[in-house]
Length: 206
View 1 (cartoon, rainbow, N blue to C red):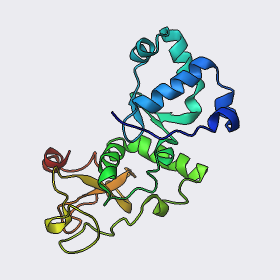
View 2 (view 1 turned 90 degrees about the vertical axis):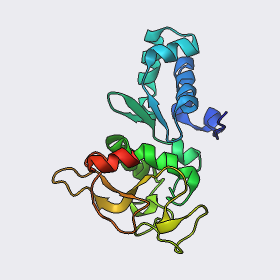
View 3 (view 1 turned 45 degrees about the vertical axis):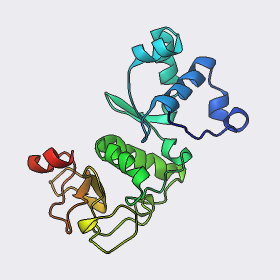
View 4 (view 1 turned 180 degrees about the horizontal axis):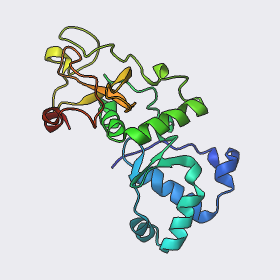
């Protein structure tokens, strides 16, 4: 059962939270406790209403009432402050606990970009550079870098993963999404985002 940090001062010091009605407060807690490790929740008002024993109209309005706390697309929402309050910023590609977070972020490139804008506006990060903690300038090779569980060419034991390349965007004209690399490669063999990776790469790493 996952355990998550919470900031208890929100009941007495957070003006936004204090002014929410009871349904909106409950919806906020529902999101925080039902999102994944990166703060993403697949929007499902009907299920949320069932879990909270509220009608769907009330839950939909509560979801709208707390829209300041998340960014969303047609299918998912992402809680802006989640990774900050769970003490996961800055992200570290060598931290095993961050592997799942990184993979989820790069699988939602649009929301990931929106989150970075909000993180910077809130002061969680000062720039793209401060998003990362000890991010390698290239994939680790055997005998280099820090971290436990490193094998040949810096690959992590277990399922291969893809990581965003700090400061590099996809080379496809007009894309602008973060480029990713394979952790089992000693050099960058492509500067493509997750969406534009070759299908043979996706078949192994996605």
